[in-house]
Length: 92
Image 1 (cartoon, rainbow, N blue to C red):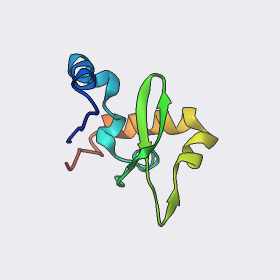
Image 2: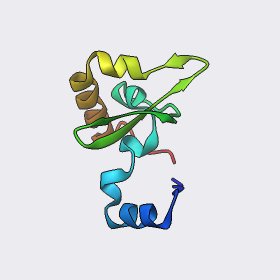
Image 3: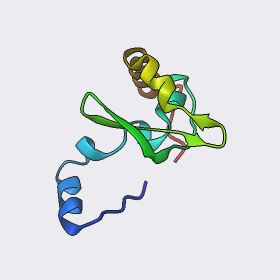
Image 4: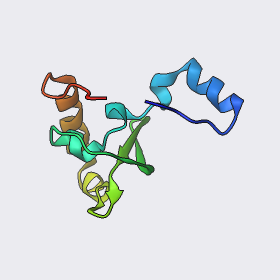
């Protein structure tokens, strides 16, 4: 995963604690992760869930952020369960 920074100061903050700033599920769509699959995400479509960045697909097929917002507790739990299990190994 490649990261781009607006400033050297922002890069230093990230480097000091990447887990705090890096998107969950390796930057894949959070809704897709909650369903046990992968889908590209738009970094401009996101939410902060329990202090963690979660990104979502937003394109020709629609915007998945509203699906997440409809039940963020369930979606987050499902995504974390799938991501932690061997049914999702990061293809990147």
